[in-house]
Image (cartoon, rainbow, N blue to C red; front, side):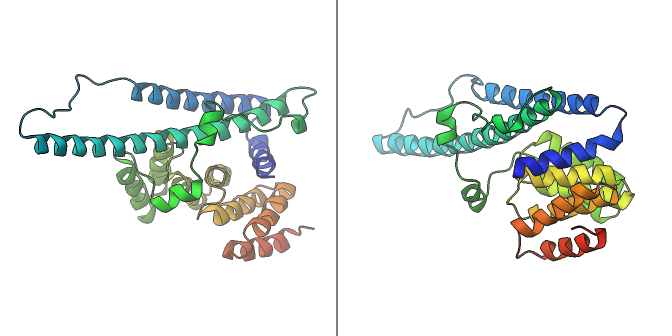
Length: 272
């Protein structure tokens, strides 16, 4: 159902923006593939050494050498866990992106049956899928941020809070392109949508809300992002898609404040 909702919203948003919806979709696919290629290249660099070994356990007494080895082991264990989390995060994000690409490509192909696509194989193989941590567990532990990730997000949020919405959209977009799938990405997409709303750019706002929700469909921003997506679709005149999306807010997040807002919006749009 989630993939179907995302697919419906993606197609609805792309339809009125160009003379050829197929050209726009193909451009999106090329962009997504480029992002995946960059992430794979980053992982490849992680497998390369950076020079001579830096571990030094020589000299001193036996106890000093044992203490040095224990300290180095702790450091390497911590670094390994950090890299493992990053790889798993990229694997999960890449698998989701490939699944979306399969649906979009199927839409372009004559005679393709979406119902026969099945589940997307995990990027990297079965072993990687079995070792993936649950998203809830990673959130509770507080996933590590890349160097500069928080500072760049804060700079974009400052521009947003100061009312410099054009600057905010540029900074939030740059942040999500630099750290795709990062822990701050859902907030960055959502606030970028808010900034576009303030500028009256409803189509861009809807795309940002869609990116926020699809990137973290059970995250803290998910109810509001889904509601804002439905409201934006309604403002764009895509009433059928808007009603479907707004109904999904109540289905997925019945206890949220966004569910009440979505119900009111459905009445306003005359949804069945």
